[in-house]
Image (cartoon, rainbow, N blue to C red; front, side, top):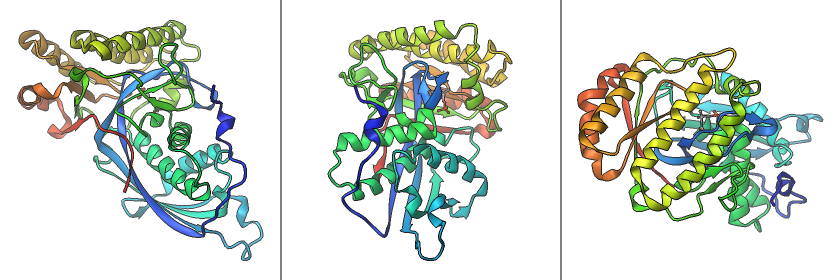
Length: 366
Ligand code: PMV
């Protein structure tokens, strides 16, 4: 089995003075949710997600070797500037500093360079769409591009596994934003190659019914979350239902393995909606308890159920750690579902805003 120490490099054979890379990485939407973790961003249960296509972060990483003759201790700390949409962004820096500290053991060259990280999102800032998954994945890809220059012999498999491992150390779910349309993260007995350390492409064939899935994200509440996901994960530690929930995630993933093969959309919908409500049920039953859904989240869920009952169109919802609703449906019903969204759901969105997305392939070097 692969262990984290396999990603600690020995000597590099090559060197580089300066340069830059640019990667885009998408967001992802979990079908079986990750909620609860152990030390070092190891998930308490396995999860699986659809990779998105349009909601992404584009990050340019410029690097220049530090001039060690100008200051003696210059190599003692990380050195980086952070730009968001071209403007200096001081308040993002502590998160990046922490990320660099966590991954230094895997990328021992980090203190040799000064970095300029220039990042932007394709989705509106403060839309309530977390940019941590796409953002951390895009940064991890860039850092791996640099490591590949220093070690050109590395295989593609190592490159992508390590990129995902690094992204995981930035933000757990970010490890599912690296490569593949359906990505599993976390050991699962019946998914070969699955690992707690990094995300892997779902290894089995996916039925045509579940390909090209659409995800329309209804922006219900764009405000700051009252409870961060870091705090939420932490509350699973003394949670009365935690162990049962972690076991249930394994079971639901087992069921999804069969569903991806059969293409049974009714069964798919049951698992996905149950997972979304279970995630929020965990929040409502932790101590302290909290609610991230808003009244309009429930209005939308009820409207989707009513529409599905009436039309038999296989459309369902899922939720992240927030009030926004992801509406999931196959491409061949897109026209009808979009009409339904425009007619009946837009009124529940803040400023009528929603984002049309679909399954994508992962990070791209630009
Ligand atoms: O990656 P984090 O720590 O922000 O956690 C995200 C957790 C959920 O989005 C709620 C579920 C998931 O699996 O993505």
